Length: 218
Ligand SMILES: [Zn+2]
Image 1 (cartoon, protein in one colour):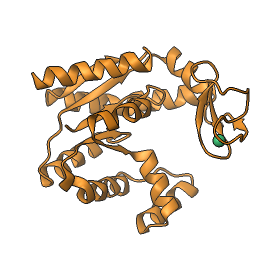
Image 2 (image 1 turned 90 degrees about the horizontal axis):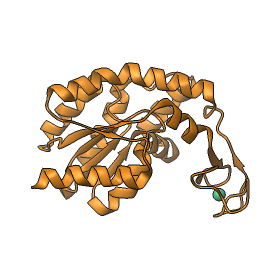
Image 3 (image 1 turned 180 degrees about the vertical axis):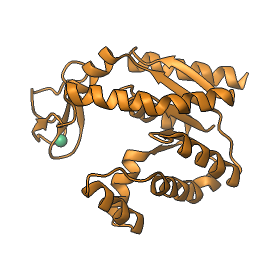
Image 4 (image 1 turned 30 degrees about the vertical axis):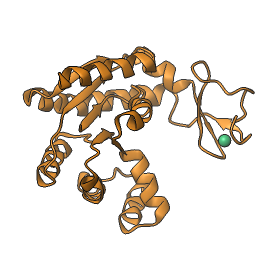
């Protein structure tokens, strides 16, 4: 099964994919994780991406698409299927994904739109804390560390990312909503859009997706 996850930052795409990738046996294709891996690995495309990131610019559609296409080509033979998280981000990327899938003889099951309200996203993102040393994620109320400000895993200091403040989050949400609406329409027109309420807890969201998958099977 191939699924595209759509939703604003804070809607819980990464959490959902992380919770289900093993259970469903699919590859979790996270644009953010892939970009970090390519940069860390010092690959040709990683160096290219690094230049855009360091100059403060957006990584162009074409480069992101090439990275995703490479990942699919390298893994498509195992027939496990994919859960896309953070891609496509524009209609142009959605069209490219259709082309890549067609060329690799795989098909999109559906796009899952995880609809989250501004209030919930603000609560999730402003409460988020990250370990300086190992990158582990915590949340002040939903997933607090045992000792305030200290990482359970490695004892490192926890901090709040600079872009996890209310003003930046509101901006990111409105940018997301503007750029995503056309993608939602794109998948709706293909009859491939499913929507779920992502304001609920992680278990409810997971249950909602499993229900859709079961309905698809029957
Ligand atoms: Zn840590």
